[in-house]
Each structure stands twice: as C-alpha cells, then as structure tokens.
Length: 517
Image 1 (cartoon, rainbow, N blue to C red):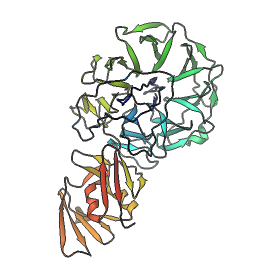
Image 2: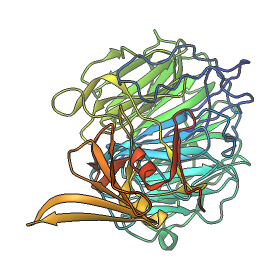
Image 3: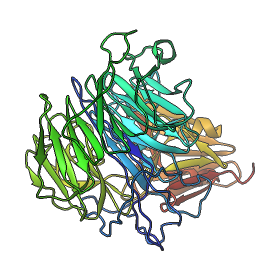
Image 4: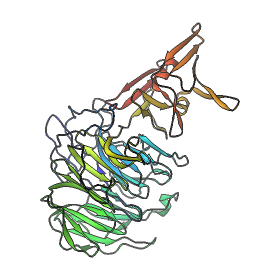
C-alpha cells in the first residue's frame, strides 16, 4: 500500500490532488497504495482541527476535485504559521501509519513486534496516541504492509524502510523514487524515469543492508503506478494499460518478464487484493480481475474516484466523497459507511478501515483491539462501528530542539500527558519513584533548586523550593498516569520547575523552555 503527501483540503483558492491507492495482502496481509498528487500552493485557511473534541463526530465536507499524475512537494517543516493536518493514511495489520502536512510520519496501534519502528529493543503493546517515526523528514509517500514492514519516500527521492523491530534505514542506490509499494514478501519502487525496481523483504530482526538486493523489472517504461499483490507485481503505464510479473519466492532469483493484462484499458489506478486486482478507469468505473484473468464490472452503479482493497474486502470512495465497503468488511456490513462525508482518501487495513477527510482528519472503524482505529474501542469486543477521529500527532520541543521518544505524548480531554522519565532525562532533571513496604508511595521530580512531590491518584502536586519559604500546593487537571508502559504527567507539572511550557493545538506543538539557559 502507499500514500502520497497531498492535501485535498479547503483553501483560499481551489487546489486539487490525487493519490492512486493500492493495497494487497499475502498470507496475512499485503497492503499497498500508490498516490500521485498536485502540490498545494496556499495555506489551508479554513481548516478546523478539533483536537480535543469527543470522538465520533461527523467528518468534514467540501471535498475538492483531483488531478492525476502530478507529484507533490512536502509542506515546509519550519513554517510554524501553518496549521498541521494529515495528508495520507495507511491501514496495516493492527496498526496505522499516517503522513502529516509537514512531512513527518506518525503511527499508532499494535507494537508487539516492533511494527511501529520507534525502537529496536523496546516494545509496548499498543498506543492510540500517535508516535513520531524517528529519522524521517520531508516525506512525500508512505507505504505499509500486513507483515509489519513500512516504507517512505523523502523529497530527495530516497526510500526509507522500518518496522519488524527495525528503526528507519535508507535503501541504498535509489535517489529518484516517486512511489513505493511494500508488501508482505517484496517491495516495488517506481523511479522518476518510469522504470521499476523491486527487492525481497527481509525476515524480522535481520539486517536489511545485508539481505536487500535490488532487481530491475525488465521491459517496463513510462510507468506511473506500481502495486504488489502476494507474489505478483503490477504496473500501470501512461497509456492506461496494466502489466504484471511474478516476484521471486526465494532469495537470489530474478523476477519474471512482465506481460500485458487483457481486458483492462484506459485505467487510471490499480489496487491489489491478495492475488487479485482491482482497476479504476478514467470514467470512474471499477473493474475486478480474478485469479483466472477474467475482467468483470465491480459496482458500476457508483462513480469512483479512489479505492483500496484487502484480501477480504474493498473500499470505494465516490466522487461525492462517500465511502462504500464490500466483501467481508471490518464491521460485517456491506454498503455505504455512515457518519462519513467529504472524504478524500480511504485505506483498507487488515481488520480496520480508515478514511481521510477534506479537513485533514483521520477516521477509523472496525477492529480496535490494539487501538488501531485511533481511539479506545466504543463497543464490546474491541470494536468501533461508528467512525472515530484519530488524534493528531504532536511534537514536543525542549529548549527549541525536537524531542524524540519511543513513548508518545498523550492528549486527553483535559491536558497533554508527557512521558516524564524521558523528558526528565533530556532536561537534566531527576525523576524518582518512591516505595514503602514494596508498594508505590509517591513520585519526586527535581530540577535546579526545586522539588515536586506527586502522590498517585491525586490531582495536585507539592513544590518545595530552596528559594521560597514553606511549600506550595498546586492543583492539576488530572493525576499522574501510566500509558503504554511509560509513566506520564500533565505538562503543567513542568511549570512548577520554573520552566516555560506552552501548548499550541493548531500547530500540534508543545514547547518546554528553560529561560535561564
């Protein structure tokens, strides 16, 4: 699957984008998408980001039309005047990857096997609060697979892979990629000159650099989209024809020679689903290619502008911004997905589905066992039947420098909770857990000449300072907490240390500054 950094959002002047979506599943899921988008030219002036709103409100309306085959440049990351929003989203095997308008990449959901790629030796079960993927910037394309592998293209044309216990690493010898589609078994890359490369995905915890071997798919040129489905590769040419080849099932073997698929003409995008294929023509009609190579109409009552598929179901996005789901869907129901409008992109995760609105918000529904939908489950059995809005990933800056941690900052209805052990270490502060008779008693946070004492389950803290007589008792919006295995405290606690702390939800930025430094 893959997504391009685009913005089908409300702007002062009309702008248009397009992403060619594609996804496929192997033994568990091989999900891919391709996206081609028009560069945005103006700042989104009417974007409403309800970061603290209760989930399950309706998605935004006013979707903009799209234009194809134009790559997009990422929003300048140093432009703090712009509001932050999501531009692409990918549903994978119990987790989600999303691309933000500043070119940063975020993930949430399961992390039992290091799927999120934020640490090579520490795991935690899950997170619904987005965590920033390290080492990545100015990203234009993202791609995820059911096997826990992920890939991204930066604005300089380089490809980076992460997941399965590995943090992001650059793919060597590629500097002009325009799109990438990563599957359970192999990864396929499209270069600026219209040619295609592929390589096999390494098993978990294996050194990527020692196992990756790039192969050229012979005979392909003028390609505008690539897709992977099981052990099959697909490519869409400028002339609207679709070509396929077999990817090797053993290391060292070369891909087969591509052949043209019959019955598919004037195609604008393709989407893989297991070993089958869906194709969208330039008139907005979807076609299905079965295992025997037979092409049949797929819900021609709908005029489709984008689509995405899983091995068991398909999502169709109409030109009016409505979403339809067919097959063995994530909720067990077929047809129109209610409570969504103004949608500009869709993503078919293995057990959950996702939609991107014209306002740059992400909505999830279906399985939420690992909070992959983007919020705690709203129904029994870990399910979300009515789409919930995912949080916007937030950046934390310490004295003007971006703070990176394997644990996310957590936005709650009342405050932002911070992973205090990592924050304290970066600040040079000291955080301690105190026990009495083997049980937790209280916490202390020391910085310069101040000591903060926090009792568990109490919404206040105590400040002791060498420069002040007596003690101060400060009220909190909520108590100290524990999230994804990390102890977290409300950000307001840090003000008790004499630090300047500010939270800007529109820029998704929390700043912590020591005025004495």
